[in-house]
Length: 373
Ligand SMILES: [Zn+2]
Image 1 (cartoon, helix red, strand yellow):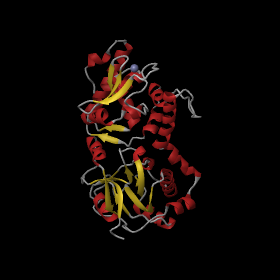
Image 2: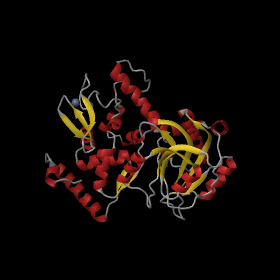
Image 3: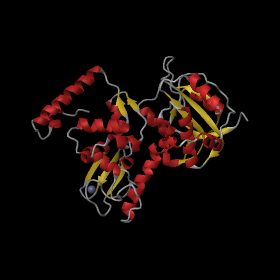
């Protein structure tokens, strides 16, 4: 039993500190499907390796989910390791192991708890229900760990906590015993479902004029509408991007241009050909492609425009300054940049200058300032 292997997505690079910026993209790209014993996985994670509990095929997103046996919970709100462990044992749900994350401190515990189901789950709805039930009954869990494509970094704790590699949970039992309709919120807040709703609307728009979606107008692309209305809250929800802090602006922009998916942002099913979102378009005249440098671009053939993701957002959102557009991108994707006090002051100065210049109605304030990024 102890050499029993499970499947998951795994990357063996042992980080000494929490991966930042570019490294996050590198981890995402480097994850591969492995067969690994739970003991080896536990050892690797507490020495800095990374994994996704699910098995994803053909891509790294929630929609690529195919099966899952491991389930992970993320605790970072300050609840103590022993408190959570005692709670799950009382509930009769024994984890295989726990480990502390890179940011764990003695006075603020941050850790993960990993469970193994007794069978491989291939039904996505059972998977979602089990994940939501675990989160709901235990409580105090970071909600972003719901997602099917959730990536878990390891930590530097070196020691596996509460190892019990042969412990198994049973999805049917847990759901039957503990499911509560309130837990539905985790499922409906998560990306796959809200995205699917949008997709239904988007595809009925392109195929025929009769929308079947009850909640939404068939012609409306809700993501594009949200960009136009600067609806940060909505976009944050549907994009469901894990927070990343970048060391500097270069790393930030590298990530923005090469890692963010324009098709996902504007909710397009077929990036090779779709109706342009910049104007009325009856015949598909737009596409998304990747340049030789790995940068995603939006192409509008009818107006002969080629835009990167930032330019697309600037135009759609009609942002009055580059700074505001950048801030919007950071907000909707949950991104931040470590800044020295000096650069924060610089930014405040620039912001002030921009608002002064805007008041003077200069047609192109940014040209006067040079690049502010
Ligand atoms: Zn166009």
